[in-house]
Amino acid sequence: MALKLGILVSGRGTNMASIIEAVQTKQIPQTEVAVVITSNPGALALEIARSFSIPIAVVDSLSYKNRRREFDIELAKELAKHGVTPKEGLVVLAGFMRILGADLVKQYAGRIMNIHPSLLPSFPGLHAQKQALEYGAKVSGCTVHFVEEGVDTGPIIIQSAVTIRENEMEETLAARILEQEHRIYPEAIQYFAEGRILIEGHQVSIRE
Ligand code: GAR
Image 1 (spheres, rainbow, N blue to C red):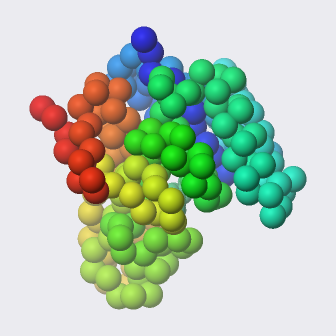
Image 2 (image 1 turned 90 degrees about the vertical axis):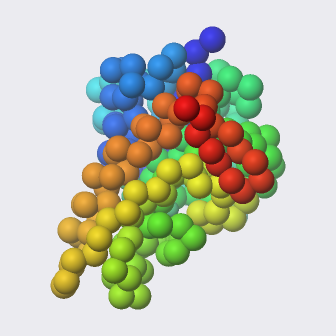
């Protein structure tokens, strides 16, 4: 049975595009992108999803201000409607700027992934690249991890390190990290689709 991906986006959607391409070229085997869901009706990602003829759903975060539970319930409805169930689905957060509530995270335990532009647990939250520069870190990078309750926490699947250069600007660092994101996110989903990921407590191992 094909693995069904539900990709959640809020912005420009370059990670989403790299995942869709990896599905289409079969780097990620036996997988279908069942739906792209956005919290932002103006997200550029929607144009890209449309160009790939992928079903789109909008759960507008502005209509759910201070109603986090209802927002999550609506998300779960859209996921289920497209076959992205806790049994057959994988929820992929790709620049999704909302925090999922405890119930949804529990419902899809071990089946929600996120990408973050730092080497977690350093620099969680917004503007991770800027945080790394301001701190004076010499190395940063990106992390794909399973989602737990909490911001940018959860068992780490893959990380990629990027050396920070002298006088590095936020834009160049972000671009060099993004290049790595586009490599490791499809790879992590590939391992999942191949059934090679083992989670034990907070440890993730990839079987050969
Ligand atoms: C990416 O850099 C992703 O790592 C980051 O948002 C960007 C989305 O870009 N996510 C987070 O900061 C989550 N905490 P994209 O829309 O082009 O994929």
